[in-house]
Length: 226
Ligand code: ADP
Ligand code: ADP
Image (cartoon, rainbow, N blue to C red; front, side, top):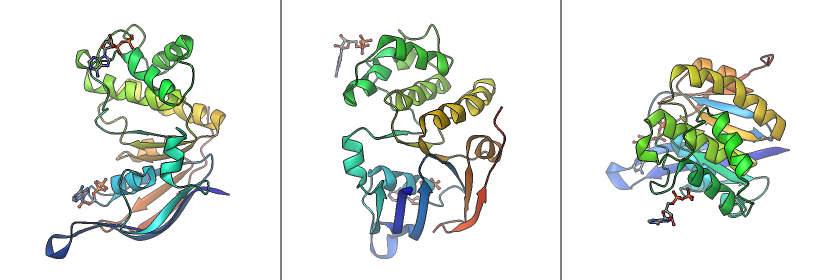
């Protein structure tokens, strides 16, 4: 059964002559355990779609269900995690503290060994005690990725999560993350500007038209994973 269901999902910001139709009624399903990459021109509504799925915005029409539940219900059970372009870490918490918080909020034990494994996964060994202000933008994004993987959410929403990550780390993550997701059976929706990244990371690539978005291509990717 599909994990994420968008039915007649639409979003208009504002009203009257200044209204912006960010998303026009869209029917989309995302299969459980699959990774889908969203590609499309800037401003076509990709982030809006992700924010609607996360329950951060209320739809103007239609609705989203995640395994039959509302985004709010799934959020409350920490079944959903999202990483944004701006990593939005807690500035007074260390790298370790930021990652551990995700576990605490999911009512899971803040297992120090798990936190260290996540730090290593995103290539930040030795930086566990740093605070966000002491890290580069790319490093902060990597903390955000580690943080949203921590509680093993069933649904992962990633909005250009590697924008500032250096090329080598990015390449490594492009190979390591799909294996991790596959093992865990995570459903992932990823917004990216990189066609290469879309193909490397996902099972399906959706290409959107300019705003208001419609799906102009729906491509199944079947890449043998090393
Ligand atoms: P993308 O992620 O594809 O670049 P967005 O979803 O961010 O596109 O934006 C889609 C459209 O909605 C754009 O025209 C953007 O300016 C507009 N938009 C997004 N968020 C808001 C908001 N909070 N208020 C008003 N307009 C918005
Ligand atoms: P840890 O790495 O042990 O999790 P943090 O770096 O997260 O520690 O926190 C450093 C200190 O900041 C701690 O003493 C913590 O109690 C304190 N702190 C926590 N929340 C806040 C807050 N909202 N404002 C200011 N300080 C805070």
